[in-house]
Length: 404
Image (cartoon, rainbow, N blue to C red; front, top):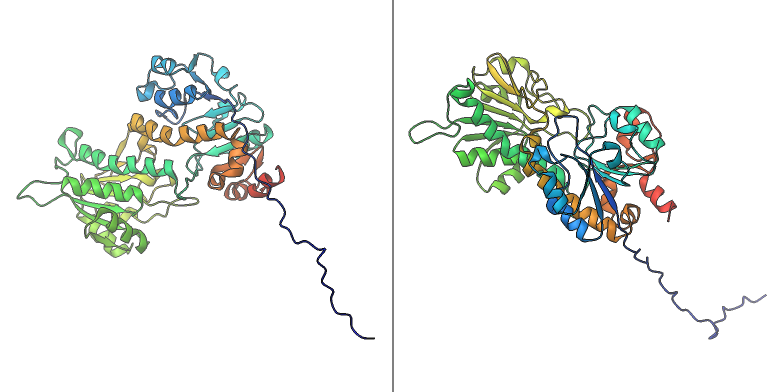
């Protein structure tokens, strides 16, 4: 049997199908609640009166608890003039469908949380409890941690701002504790003509390290930076724009430099879990009496073996004659600047959520926001937390796609 040739007919028409576009949802008016923080010595507030004013003039409602901005010197009067409603009952604020907090959710908050609420707040991994997560999951809450929020350039804007504040503040704090009035050595940080400059050691070349180095150089100190990541050291040099003394973390070299320094800053970051301990107790015992250690990474365990958490009320202790400053939340001591920095990120985000008809729609359009979500409508979507607390993990991308 002879093989048939394929037949080509003109009656077939090869046309492209119309593309179905994602229709932009209608903007919705949102109600945003700002409670007064009662834990973690938190002085910051997540939205400033200026930000509230922008939200209100765009048709959103803002409810704020009495004196929520007081620790950052934002008065109730400024908020009410911006169009916010001041309430005296904490439970009233928690009725808002969107809650914006500058401290993590604590046990006292759990009973006040509403079903299907959206919460934007930081997340303190070191003190987070499984029971808190489970209660939030039961209430079908969507929780966004603002340390993990990414922007269009794939960086973390709030962490960056807080690190810039902490880095710049570190040298101001060190200068304070080197002065005689604080029982320090009586040394001027930096130095003057004819006197050898003060020696500053910075461990960690991230953003905190970079801003600490900038401040120290500007004061005239001699700065030496350690980090195991050569790319970070290179980036720090490029950003500061001058040749600097840098080294990888080699214990003998580090120990030698610590013996003769006036100020040592611990600024090592860690993506998951605790920061590595790189300075042993023995190294600290060989440091000069009256020198100052500032351990910025204390909120993740710290990188000096002698570090212990201190508070803004009692910020320092002495060990081996060395002054240790180990306050975990340094930006909270500069709360007005820190509040403005947080507000600058959250206000545009809330505006965008409103324009897109709520956070669920926004998350569909803006992929980079997904990194900040750790609970989505009651499902735990953070892999690290699910492993740590042995809770069921759900892939956020699948979740969002299944709901379209």
